[in-house]
Length: 602
Image 1 (cartoon, rainbow, N blue to C red):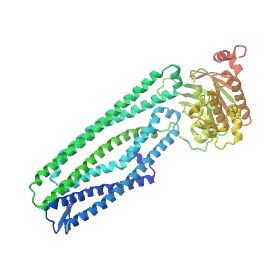
Image 2: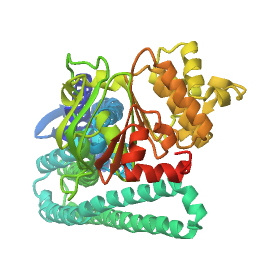
Image 3: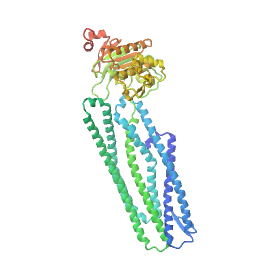
Image 4: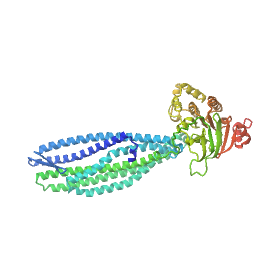
């Protein structure tokens, strides 16, 4: 848990220290109360004897003398009330501060996790499944929060009660303390055995949560496929199995947990029973009123300290289990936090100025362990104002080129340059602001149409918004909504069609006036006429600015007017040139064109 503290701001660290001090005040006050209670009970039990003119009371080997039992009870009651108030106030404020720090700490760690996750490349993020990431943001962070508050409260109270309770008990009556020779080893053995059983179960339980999240996410995201193929029963069974497995593992943990508490309670009650039994036998032979009072006081105080020791052991065991869970969760969260970005954020004076792109013998594979490269020896260039078309079969590496230009992935060999500067040396903010990459399956964020457009350019004027949506052929459907640009977009654009989402995404891409525009099959859901209009509008809008445009498509119609067309197959360029040249020289391109347009029109 200590590693979490470096992520707390200094103010929260000071509050943690204050909570610690107040907890110490609480523990010491409540321990002293038991001494006063024991002496008061001893004095009351002496009522059957004549009142003493001078009453001497020993508290922790310190003697106090009063003129009568009545006066002694009055003063002890006052001390009892004072320490009770001090302990209660300390407890309340310590709990409030600990709760605040644990909540604030969980927020800071969650924010830090989010910030670090946003700095990771797409390749880095894909090493974790979505289900695992969601679990870390929710269940794992919550358990870290519980671990923090346990660390600040029960981790302090438990050992203090155990240690000081043991010390005070020894000072109270050394002979009765022999019971600890039986009680402490039994409690220690119980905690060791239960810990060795429960901690591995906690680790397994966390993996079960990941499985449940994965099944839930799959069922929600794949709802259309599941219903299309009548897979409801199969998918439901998979979810039930995952949930059932989690239930079995969780139940095992709680059974072990409850057994631990029951054994601790059993050993404690046995210790108290032994103390009371032995003291009761000895008390029968006592005739001296002072000795009788001291015996009753000692037994009462001693049994209270046995209870404090028990509470301490229970708190320690509870804290160990809570922190064990938090430790597992902390490790899982720090797997992300401590992951070094494959592509670090660069601050540099080398900015994107024109948007000229050069690929020089670039090769790439997603994983170093892969046998084959996804892209092999790719070379091409795009001048500002030019349009590059990329076509090829599914899995030929078209989208990978787009992701490399956007610097989502790091190439394995060769060079990628923008404006004659290696992409690794460019200022990251400038690179991101200069490129608009529009995907085939865009995911609008929940909000309104306008807020989604403003994500691309927060300071865009109403005229810019209208122009961008008109050029993307999105204004037609937006204007039909009664609230137009204030129309609510549901999560993932659930209330928009595929074509509407693509046109809205294209409007987002062009509203920011990028230096490089990449359309990654982003007109696939549009009819031929709308697609042609969108591409022509984009060409007209940026005619004077001369941006570099990359159009990736499965359709010849989308790239037919490009200045240069790359034909990819199995990650290699097997042809390049204009449409007419490729129709004559490239067999694959010609076959695609004829299959789509007919031999006469191609």
